[in-house]
Image (cartoon, rainbow, N blue to C red; front, side):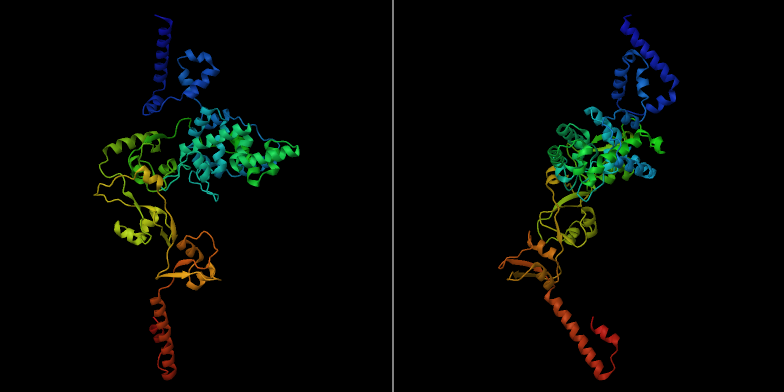
Amino acid sequence: MPQSDNRAVLKLLASAAFLFCSSSVAHAASDLSLPAYNWAKDAALQNNPGLDDDPLSAFIVGSEIDVWARIRKGFGIPDLVDNQLVNNHTTWYAARPDYIGRTTKRASLYLYHVVEELEKRGMPTELALLPFIESAFNPQAYSSAKAAGMWQFIPSTGLDYNLKQNMFKDERRGVIASTDAALNYLEKLYGMFGDWQLALAAYNWGEGSVQRALRKAEAAGTGTDYASLSIYMPAETRNYVPKLQAVKNIIATPDAYNITLLRVDNQPYFVSVAKTRDIDVKLAAQLAELPIDEFKALNPQFNRPVITGGANTEILLPQNNAEKFKANLATWTHALSSWTAHKVTNARERIETIAARFNTTPQVIREVNHIPPKMALKAGSTILVPRDPDSKQKDITSAVADSAVLTMIPERAEGRKISHTVKNGDTLLSLAKRHKVSVAQIREWNSLRSDKLVAGTRLELYGAARATAKASDKSKLAIKKVAATQDNRGKVSLASAKVSSR
């Protein structure tokens, strides 16, 4: 028998012996259909070439410890040393084990994927800790600067990196899409500056700001590293890398800070499942037999209660739940989606009218479309409305989803439309006071971009109806008459006056 055949037989026998001795482990693993994690085997074989012919090599490398160890192994950014800000932030985090616990629990859903992507690109693995600083690994995080998601992309930068943002979906929150965009952006920044600390500063502050700081430092003849440039940085950026360094210190040696890290297994938490039809978020979670909160944690990019279908639509589910989802979906005989899109074509189409047309309530329309009280819809807006279960309405097309906008204006005051020609001396404030409305309402009703009014311009206002005003005048007159009668006769009580005034 050739030597290669002997080697194959030995491998097979050794593997069988190992499985026989570990039957309980093998039994548990038999339910999994996950791919082999070749990164571990490859890394081990590179360091130990002799293992290539060892029949037990697959089991040796398969015992790789958790993701935290994998992150430590790939640290590659020079440490900030002798830095008081690092010391301050390390102390702050170390004093809050509950905060560390909550954040690492959220991170446990995403860390394996992030580390995988970093290793594929040959990037330092401490970058996997960056969402710790950005969002505390909360994919629903939203900042005052309108930054969204785990990696905190502002709208414009998100668009630069192909993160779709529409009424139905915001990929700045999507786990896979936002991670890919963030690593692309960080790679670009590192290519610009050749320094990971400056790349991180630019991620927080903007590449233009870092470039200007570099020019200032060069003109002053001072250093151009992160620590030297910090004098030009705003406080947030000056603390940004020190915060990451502080988290890195704790992850590197948690015992030194009396921190116990939640174990994160070195295997995928989720898999991707293609979805080509519209489906309600609640139903998708139900078919996957997954709690709705966990479903949303894995699929935070969906803004509405329906996931619009399409060739590129996918949902993330834990492996076992993905199999349940496919099996349950195959036997589901009812409608998948209970919502469809409706475009408002008339500025006078009120939410109450729309609700009545689709057999629902104004409250449902407002809640599902995130329309606050006392706000109305502008013509051209697209909203979700209940889908008729007995009709054969088509799914929401990708064209509709991509072009959908929802624009709101303050509700018009009850009453008739008033046309007003602007006179010299008129201001928005004076008109608002005169007609008992707000400046914002006048601007919205007339699409004004400036507070400056030009004499002769015609404005539309919606003040109190004349009938209402006349009714009020009559009420006041009735009160006066009752009071006069009371004075003359002394027989009319205050209660009667109140009744008459209604």
